[in-house]
Image (tube, rainbow, N blue to C red; front, side, top):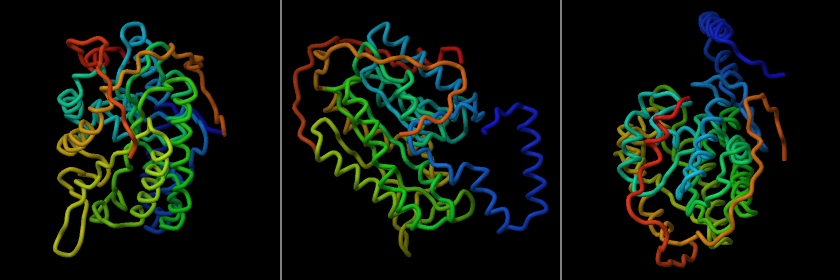
Length: 348
């Protein structure tokens, strides 16, 4: 049974880990690290992380996002929502709800490219697809105002969770399920939350093979083919839904060398998360994909209906290129202040 971790408990665990690092050899510690980092713990259905204390705490952060959605719904609502994990949370300049070095400047990049929309970032570092699935079922979907566009980047942490033995075979085996879980979230939107909104699936970005050393930027690596498999499945999904779209913003993060290819450390300093320079490159890519979708008027749809089941109590496991018609936007025009400004002023 999962345990709620107190501050004292965290310190004890860290001290224990430090002691283990001293007494254990490299191979023994390598076998322990997957358990400590959440590897081999895939979220195969909608699942919360209520006992995760990273940052301000997962459940606390989720409830903050729920309040942001509810507050916006009382006004004009959002017309563009970004869903995702830590890479998307970088747009807020935070990780787990608190500032962190790599994400520094991400919020400024977001304002630069997307402040012309009523845009919102609903992303939590460390989330797998199942965690986002749970969040959209528990308050992180608008009830009144349907956005014009949802965009999602999610799945790299599912690969982490499947990386038990650090081999390509197990990651390839997990890839179809990862993509299909993203498809389940799309269907939630289609079944009533936002039937006429456009959904833009972002390709899973290239990533390194380790957290330290040169393998951080090695490419290709054991993640390459699984990432390709997930992204290929996304493209197949897009072919069957005229309101579903796909964009791959990953190529600029791979650079050619004399001997092959590597990830660009100037934009992916840890081999996974784009810094402000990388976010700016990605934002330009996304902006070009989002702009035509934002011109489609979805305001004629009925108000959204969704039961709000979010609360502060612990919740356990709950397991189970396209054509585009553009229309003249006759909705509210004029200045659209960035939703980030109000969000950053909100109390945690």
